[in-house]
Image 1 (cartoon, rainbow, N blue to C red):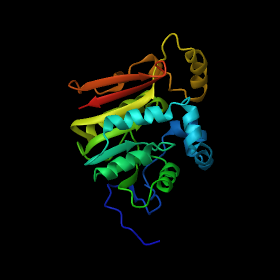
Image 2 (image 1 turned 180 degrees about the vertical axis):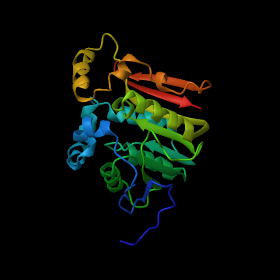
Image 3 (image 1 turned 30 degrees about the vertical axis):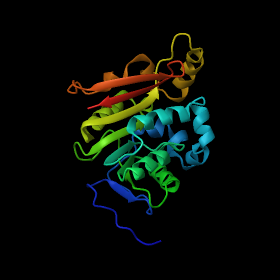
Amino acid sequence: MDSVVAPPASPGVAQVNLPLVDLPADDLDVPSYLDVHYWWAYVHPNAVKVFERQWLASAILLGNYARLREAALADLGATLPGRTLQVACVYGDLTTRLCDRVAAGGGELDIVDVLPVQLNNMRKKLPADAPARLIRMDSSDMRLPDASYDRAIIFFLLHEQPESYRARTISELMRVVKPGGRIVIVDYARPRWWNPLRYVLGPLLAALEPFALDLWREDITKWMPATQDNLRIERRSFFGGLYQKIVVTR
């Protein structure tokens, strides 16, 4: 393989051009909640082998993956010039479709994730000439410049994080997106009272994803910085309220 020189990175941040493998960041630890609660889904190498299947990603979201993906992408735009940020790798084809829109707009895509195994998996999913960088970084402490992105997307990450991480991740998103830029959040929400799935999924989420029910109990705006008082927030519910899309314009 020809060598490719990655752009300079901040200390402790591993930056990867797509033809390269991930470079370890010596001072970057994997958050303990991932090792304790999500080793089976994201951390262990076998997790990628099991879960990186489009049909399985769709099944986990009860057949709603494509609908939620397209709803999120529609709010970002058909063509994406400038700089786009995706926070955390995602199983399925969300990122490849996002990358197509970035390429159509002549833009750049940065994908950040704290787990090397997820970044390596993403590298295999994207074409070598994709206009993307893979950056190993903790979403709650993104060593990225202020107001450096035109838009950002975070797809089913917040429900996996303890409250303190969730608040810092949202705060970091607000910091790195430019004024006037959009942040698209897709995640779980409290189902409507008439949705029978609430009685099945409640115990299941409590057992497998111990922080997910936070998003049933509280509005996502609870974890937004108090200093951000001029935000425009648009909401849409899906599948009897079980899923939500929030579009924040700074």
